[in-house]
Length: 271
Image 1 (cartoon, rainbow, N blue to C red):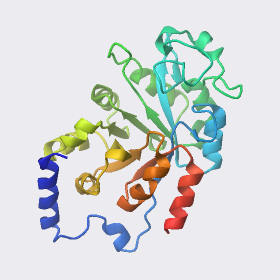
Image 2 (cartoon, one colour):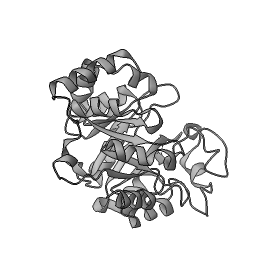
Image 3 (cartoon, rainbow, N blue to C red):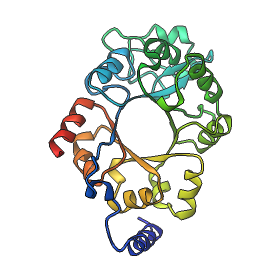
């Protein structure tokens, strides 16, 4: 970790009388991070399918997370990878396949790949959405306006939607389209290592928090981010059971979970 983080944290602790940044729990209030169903309940059902989303809702996740890709004919579909190879019985880049070809694929247990519109049509304002935007394979922004139009079309309240992206351009574009959106900037390891006061302030100007891989999180980083009044949402890479206890110990503000029931149980035990 870079010296800038250590130096800033030292200053923070000195200014706060060396007391813990996590004062809420100490003051008696209840610590309860957001449970964000990662691609739905993806450890239990095929990811990004209605089976997975339904299970997450049954498990009382606070949000269902949806990764977006755009098809060759301009439709937004729920798909994490740039190809359909891993999660379906087909092959090829999503952006080179038409929606008809994508819908013909088996996404697991006979499920099809849902479109963003189908998801909104099915759940409406009954659930909370945590949606990830991304650039296309050429690094262009292709989905921001279309996504916001769909959310407006289906009358999804803004306070029920969080939008996230690794793309700073996408986050800035979304903010310009609607400054009232709730945004989270995803950070890679190099971004975390370079965090400083100016960088955190720049994020805070347009976003409510940051998303960081749990495996690179240290308590000093969590404290630094939360001191600057930003939320921190931790995600995993298939290693949820390895890091969950530590994320709860660090009191991060939100936790992505492949198995929301598992996370809820861990939270109850910790109480």
